[in-house]
Image 1 (cartoon, rainbow over the protein chains, first blue to last red):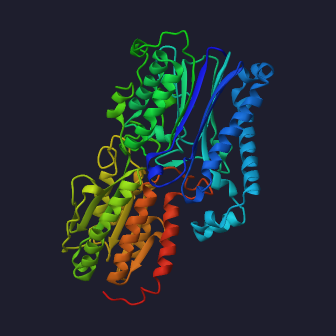
Image 2: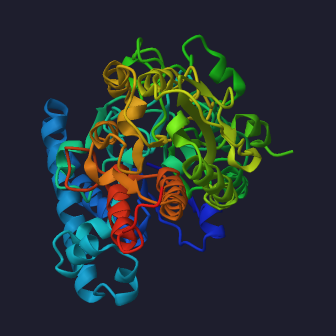
Image 3: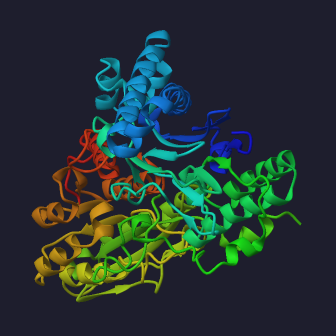
Length: 318
Length: 243
């Protein structure tokens, strides 16, 4: 996988700095001879999710560990993956959920909930955590992961945030199906009992030019989907034009400004770039195919714009 | 100039609209409307602070008064930073159904929820002291089909014991989110608490779980729980009816 490049950036939100709250996002990227991986996780924050910064770290680590173990068998399972990606990736999802729950429980054993952590909770919530009925919810987080190997790629997602892929013809798509249960500012989560049912995936043997996974702090900073796609287009052009480290640094400098002017939330983005040796210029994105409009399978949410015509346009997931 | 600078025109902040639906029928005359005017006017600076410090969403305010008919105080939701409370007068009957119909019209991306960066689910705060004098059921039925309404934080304050509690419960969807104010001081406390709490909860991103589909609570659940705790604290103060 010598041609692939990866990066991950995670920046604390402008509002979180003002409120003295830790960054609840985590991002991770990895590349070796067998695969390239990009992962972002967004801890929910809020009183009930008081360890979600740890939850997102654990999610990034356990997701990567599960993917790495899974990919070590890629030669043996490639035919089955081609034949039935739902089943094979379903096993990977179960493995991620299981490992995350196990790691979270271990974290609580090693670091029991403190009085200071429980002090701000309401009576009912406090009882739940004191008796460790739903201790995982303290660590609640979303996950988006994308993997590119030599001959196939796949993506996994639970909760909000977006995965955007730049195709060879410059078209930008969202390959992982959207979950309409992620509406307004409600998201599904790995801490939910029905996490497996809400874990979505994508599989293809066609490799994209670039794939970006971003938390909702990125999505929510833009006025519309077209502006979000412009952002990912700019990143792709930047890496096409600049030295890799210089491009990473330029993006790293921009993300705090994005949070300040936009969502105020933590902003994280990770990517796998497959652009080395290819001509990445504005012309790529001027092709007739690059409409920037999501295809039917890329619809990103339930419409609330017009009660009479509910399919008219999209709504962002806050 | 950096490569990302030209994106700045497409960057925007989300909004959360706090709706005040205020009964200004004749029976609200005197200390009732006085307490409402005073309390909302006094809570505005606090809402400005929340909007400024809680950058998950900018808070905007919309006010609908209803008596013999209904009318919006402003043609669009106003940023908390720029909002000035216009003291309300009273007169007429209680056309709550008309208010529900007008609210439904504005709960649309083509109307009050049109901000380019998207809107969080709104918070809707209804205050009334009496019985609806029109056929409110039709308006409420229409409202219940509205997805913004379904996802909104909804709360109602019954001002005095003559208010129709059943109608208010029907509006909020549960009895926990209906409070009863039996004197001006309690009403002021309720308006302050509800406005601030609904704004704080409503403007935060990423609550987890789905109504009816998860063990984890929605924002409405979170809000109802806080209302219950607040109401329990108020019980001792609220024994006397002083309207």
